[in-house]
Length: 448
Image 1 (spheres, rainbow, N blue to C red):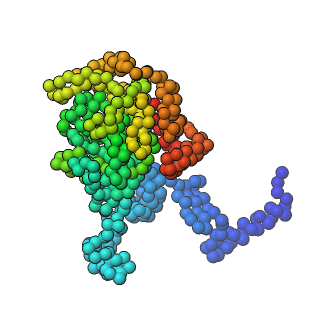
Image 2: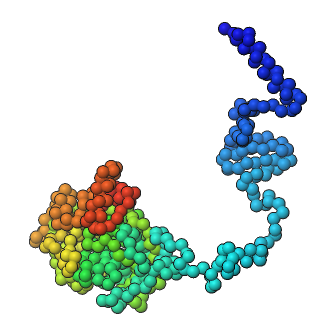
Image 3: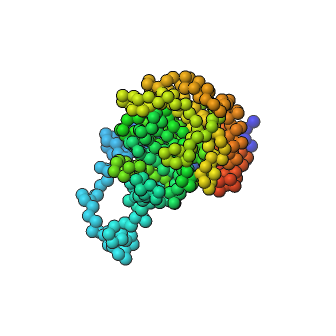
């Protein structure tokens, strides 16, 4: 079926008119021109080049678009290639050979459009990052300071000026090297991760101090030498992790709800040794992986709460003198202990602790095999072995500040679960948490 004669005549007349105008005025009015299919498109406002991933055959004056670089290119002579945008520095013409500041110096003078304060830029004007930042930099801009513990003048460290909830701190530690986290202003409450080679096969561990009373939260079954070890201490919610050498998988994962916020820093228990390491400490976001437990126990709590005799779970011991490491405990285990303490006195609320024993792939050869040590723990008076479900249930029973999300991970939490935990943390710990961090925390492996 063809077009009606009237319509066809009008179409011919309109086309003839456009061609006539083009021949007379050199102007052809169309909405869009396509040349070579999708090669190039021209409309009233723009020219669109078809993206190429290699150069075409060169011709003088040819222009094309490379999407893989990306850049607009042209050939001025059919031999060489130049960038239209972004231009190469060597292709910029009439640029000065030097850039003397005299032409804009007045703008930086007093009263200028961009004045520099006398003596340079003030510390308050420098960037203040709070993660992935060196403590030495924070000291330089006035956001870190040295502190000496009021109740122990031998302990000195470089601390953040501001308090934080969830952070990690990393540095090289020697013997008597300490990380301090969530430390109170009066220095009487804090979490500590430290190296102490005088201990028998528990040289790297985590402690807490609450109003002066000290409690062991976990130790690695290791005898260390007095050399530098790269270490990290991470706190996120109620989860504490201590790393040594391996910055991905912690040696110890502990759970505690006593302290929620405070200063972070690193230093030493001996003012005469290794303080320089504090300058190179880093403030980081918390770590995510956890240590894998291989057994759970309920054990009696022993100790008096002093630095020399801290509250701690009862763990088997067989002390011998080693030619290299000195006093060692051949029955030592890598463990963490859940020991809720009174907020006023720092003393344990209950008479027993929940102990998680962790795997130790590179266990030192002078120590007994882990299974022999576990049998010794099972044989101790007042010790009860638990399965995972019993341990988690008992943890919530002895510490009512623990949420289930502090003990287990949920790979894909829904919005209701996230909001419920945010509300819980605010009502229970008076700590704010945004949706993104709450979701990440709920997904995190808690080491239970």
